[in-house]
Length: 391
Image (tube, rainbow, N blue to C red; front, side, top):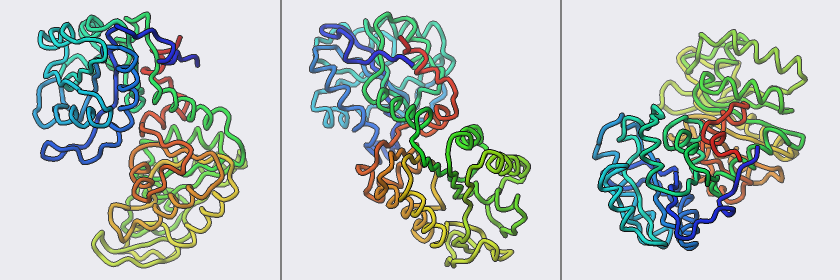
């Protein structure tokens, strides 16, 4: 995969359409988490300092092709300005007259932030007309939004083809480098930890990891389906009964390939999310109980595996870690990961929140900004936003 880097582009005096991932959680018009803006800020600053006219754009939330005040990027502009150390002018438009006028008035070093791309009906449809309209605003295209790279949208895929001068931003480049190392050049012993609520959204990645990792550790709700597939009673735990045969197939694949499959040996169970928990072997879950976290024996086994690993990939929490009573397993994995001497990659979503909550993100080799994108990349899928940048 040959990606041109942003540093190779001549941007001085040029208009640069910069696709960022500013899909941040908002509440009452304020950002609840600035992580993605903080990740984007160095790219904005670097382009502005090199004399580019920066036309930043992003989606936010699930706007369906029409304006929604609750999903406006307006509150993001001052945060981006503070973190980038540059004034940022918010443009309440994407490709209309206001956007054209703002770009025409901008000077080298200026930074504009366009309104939410998904307010345009053509964004998620990769509409050629919207691609052309976006391309008309700029001379150069840079995509630094790895978290959206698995979407074939106008701003991530279609528009790139309309620029001779296009490149990956530094965040995108770091993501591709780190995940390629895990997928194609992992040093062994390679331990993959996969958790979260369900198998269904991660099956392709799980099957790919079974073909690459030496040890696959399953935790969280998805592990329940595997426990049930092995004939264990799991009470009222979250489970995907329609995937029991699939779980058995994955178990068979690990056996055939000599991969060590690790399932929880003990768990923290309770009769409800607000009920007191107790630790029990997974062979003794009561009929009215649900598995809500991994137990201390399982945590210790995972810590032992990470202590000797050379490569580790983790995606998905070990339990309902939003509840303090059921967060210990997820926090233990995060701390064990930080103590490991392996090349450690955490793949987006709730796992990223967990390592930040545990205060260990800086001790890991790479923390991915893309949950779905990182999983699809590891599964070997072609990500449209990356394919569009290949030189």
